[in-house]
Length: 87
Image 1 (cartoon, helix red, strand yellow):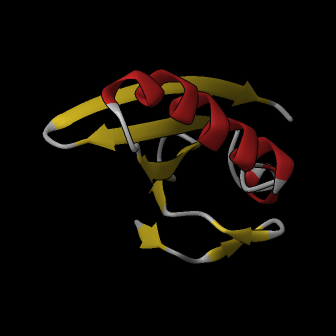
Image 2 (image 1 turned 180 degrees about the horizontal axis):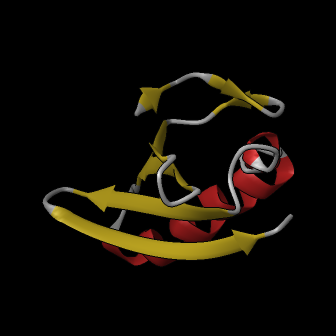
């Protein structure tokens, strides 16, 4: 696991590696301003993962990369995921 390591064109918040299974997970996290913003914020951080190519930099070493957009508001959490295989 790594945090804030440069991947693609920036720094992803968290990357978890499962080399034995050929998988990696990229997490990007956002603090939402309101409860109603959480779902949209999850989409925004998934878009950030795509736009900044965080998952792309892992394609040579991993067969499957799962991207997670996470949004928090107070004690609530929303998560959206996007799977990228054989990029």
